[in-house]
Image (cartoon, rainbow, N blue to C red; front, side, top):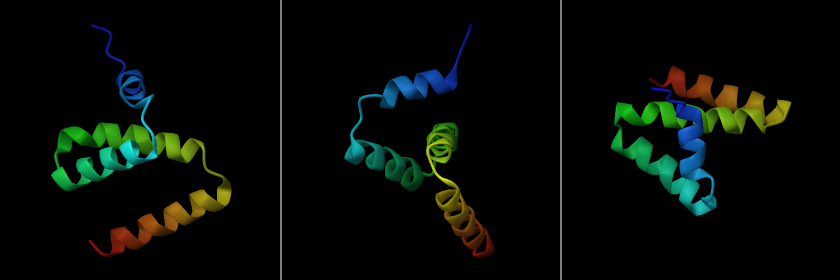
Length: 70
């Protein structure tokens, strides 16, 4: 069986607008189900690839701040 998780996730969100994408992220985080983590990872990968250096730096700083609050 050839399962390409990225392609499946891309296919599931390819026609989503901003509101639908946000709802997907919020729902995945609020539900806290671990099965959603790979999908969030793929979404983050897309965000990262389409961010400039300043945006990446801000994300890393935000992540560091969040990790320190755990």
